[in-house]
Amino acid sequence: MSEVEVNQWDELSQFSFRERRFTNPIATNGVLLEGFMFVIGWRKCSTKNEQFGLYRSLGKIENAKYEWQNRGANLSLVGCILGQSLQYDGDNLFQKIQNCYKSFWVPSFDQVNCEADIPANQGAFEFTSALTFTINGFKNSPHLDKDSSLYALGWWFQADKQTGQIQRDASKRCTGGKLFPPNDLLMIDLSECHVLIQVVWASSTFVHYTDPARDKESTTLVGMSTQCSSRLAKTMWQKSHSYYEIGERAGYQIRDGNTISSHLEEWGSVDASGS
Image (cartoon, rainbow, N blue to C red; front, top):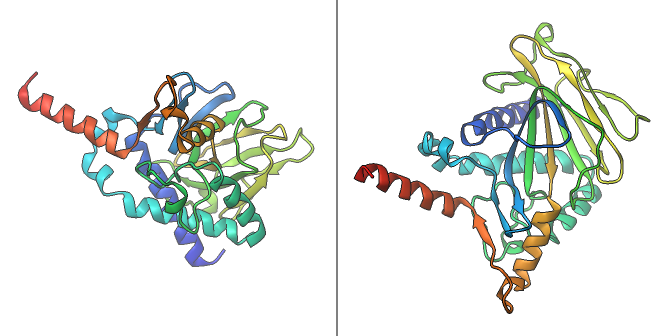
């Protein structure tokens, strides 16, 4: 990797760590055994009530409102870095993944609001609705992803536990950490990378799992991956085809940036009135 690319990933990593100010780790995940997983983007979706939106904690955003309101430019930059990184592997692969994503009519993970005409608002490097990242000795059990994406995209690197700054000091690096796709026929040692490991595989076809790395005192192995929830894709497709405007079908609810801002204003007015 060039120094420019390393610096870009360093910026991306630190941005992801700062995003923890606005969200809690995923608490319920049948395959998560150890460590923490966080989500950036459009991941939470309930089929029963047709709810979808940003995976965020209003309570945490309330405590960091200024940072929340001024993160847009950095969020778009993260999308460009990820898209360019994938494009380096070949335009055909990137185009195939992006075309599949665009067919779902879902917002990009770096969009704050759910626009009325999603495809018209998709940029050149947008290809996923959600970005997850894992830290602190993450481990999961063998599983298949329940996503609509053609492929899973994964990146692993080592970073400072507090700041997210990429760790370049070999004496402070984690050891261990392995990815097994598919069905134990292949093993990738995630600790054996100078800066970054990138993996592309059909995660909804092949069983895979991660064994934890042994973190050093100040360093953790970070894993990032992209997903497009099948339930989210179904709900957005129905929305775009006026499913919720026909007969007595239940309406849907969007929890986007506008909704979050409205809730924060309501909280502020309650605090001001002393109610």
